[in-house]
Image 1: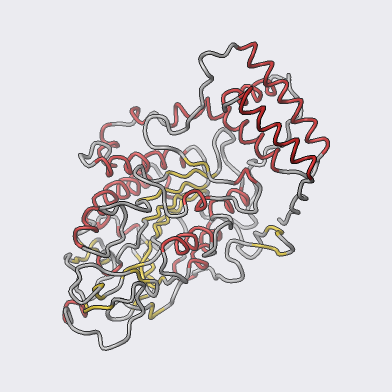
Image 2: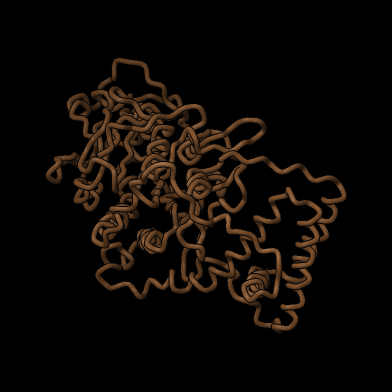
Amino acid sequence: MGETLSKPMNHPTSSFLESRRQFLGRGVGGIGGLAFGWLLAQEGQAAGMTDSPYAPKVPIASPRVKRVIHIAALGGVSHVDTFDFKPELERRHGLDAGRTFDTFFGQPGKLLKSPFTFRQYGQSGRWVSDLLPQLAQCVDDLTFIHSMHSKSSNHTPATFLMNSGFTMNGFPSAGAWVSYGLGSENQNLPAFVVLPDPRQLPAGGAINWTNGFLPGVHQGVAFRSGVEPIPDLHLPPDTTPAARADSVRFLQKLNEDFSSAHPEESALAARIRAYELAAQMQLSVPDLVALDRESDTTKQSYGLNHPNPATAGFARNCLLARRLSERGVRFVQIFNGGQFGSPRINWDAHEDLPENHRKQAVTMDQPVAGLLQDLKTRGLLEETVVLWTTEFGRTPITQGIDGKGRDHHQHGFTIFLAGAGLKPGFAYGATDEIGYSAARDPVEFYDVHATLLHLLGLDHTKLTFRHNGVDRRLTDVHGEVIQGILA
């Protein structure tokens, strides 16, 4: 699957591109105009169309699932306050841990029991705190990994690692790799769609869904919240069809001339494909985002009418994720939480964990539970894997001697999956008696990514791309499929 990078452009070409950019800004100025060029091409009035880079590709092995929904809860969800019950913290609450702790801010405090009550749920008897009462009802469909650990306890690099397998920026995200490896089931929609938290972008912004060194068509397409998720899809009202057609034909000629002079340059082809896709999306997106067509029962199950605007906004994204998935989008990523804010709008519970986690849980619990139940009812969970992650956990001790919060914690935390090919109602791995370190069957994000690709019918060691003389892959030089969670 390796490909060769295009050669760098020389100075005359760069000058030519600069004038083209100026032309784009003055003469065309919007996706709508370029989309019209695609419509002309569809009618045989324009040339230069190539096979779609989104064309479906055959997996190298029998896939268990067709697509992925990744829910990323940002800020560091505390495992010992959600899914990883630790009775020892109850018994030793307020005591010194009797050991040295590696904490991000260097303010180790006392052992802190969870302020939330844990109970066992479902036939599987999985433990969940009362912080997440609706997700607790889904445990028999979930596969927990309690032994996650990360390379970083700093939000931005840890989030990059969760998404791309690297703590540095610029590497392709998992969604881009899936798009590259499998293509799309729907040529009218992107293969990789991102739904950021309506309140704010994640730390690092669009780097989290970058295509990196992969072809540009595999970049995640971020939808906005609200009634217009894709901006500038409509033609300018003051532009005549004749003027638009002339501009587009002239632009088509420039594109053809450039492509002929630089046949190995992929950036322009990727840009053209993006605009072609935008034209196709003009036809498909209005129906896609018409959430009012859903039944009242469905909308209520997700929480679209919740009085908390943050909950309603995230619920809209979760419902949109289902609609994208059932239309064949390969990889949908939903973010819960943003980067900054005072009070915080993520799970970063330094100051007051009970207040922070209660607030964030309200935004996430019902929408994610609604999504899981809806996928199951419609039979979509049989061909979809849902992955819920956070970039790291939180310490089992307070931040500061008299603190009510917990610090960042990379040494042990919890994630979960759901879908075909997995053991439902199952818990894999474990942290130690106080939830500090991954004590049994430790798992890294490399392993999670390898398992995700395996479920899609891809071998993480063979899905590669030649970059700077190296066959790069999502899992770098690491990663093993987590056989213990597979059905």
